[in-house]
Image 1: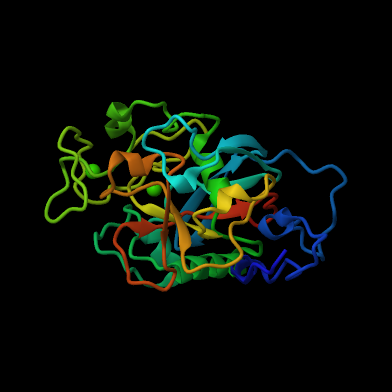
Image 2: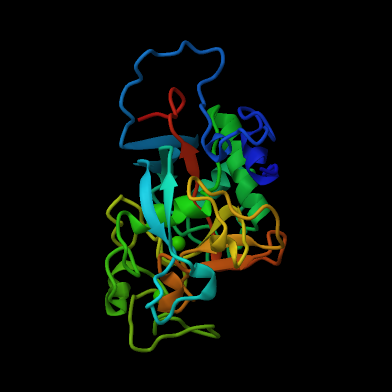
Length: 307
Ligand SMILES: [Ca+2]
Ligand SMILES: [Ca+2]
């Protein structure tokens, strides 16, 4: 396997970079994080279902435990709106537990770690947007340093696994597009001004980004996996990746001009908010007010994460 420098940028303190082909993909995505100086526990305590990290001056970030498992990634052949890059639908196994941000990273959280806020639609509880991929990775790197354990972007497979939360439907709540306004902020009739998409038949009540967690969480406790802002994944994007991708802990294409984006945004049509929909953007491209991110902390996370 080739070196995934983008993962290792956030993992350099813990992971053995660019190990040989015997190294499992998961070792880069979720290595044993126990510091070498700590005392190993013979039988570790069960992982907490939810944890919270303090960023700065009382600003905290909550994450929920996502347990390992298998799921069907991509779209079925009979889905009319499927895109070619969502196929073939295939079983993927996530072998390691991880904690995922309950929400997209907010502007308050981003400010606390990065000491800047690039967002166009200002609001402490709104998701940070206009974040280039490199700055999302830098956020993770800085938080890793502060917390003493890896923090990174989700892999594309982890993202879809967590978004689906056990579902095989178009959205995590089911197949009905008409129910999307109850669960997501997308390109509905509320969108004002020049808009890429404005679906007049729907009303979700938000013309631009909404404060995070304005909509119900999915079955695994994650808010806004559909809509609000697109979310960076750590993977390189490749349109035909599913034809040859590993079935266990896939890490994305080896290289490419684009990084993966998932979930749709406040200015996306409903079909772009589907669990399987794949989008991409250049990591060093122009700032985009539809793009944010959420973080992942590979489990176990003790002892630096406070419960
Ligand atoms: Ca909206
Ligand atoms: Ca989102």
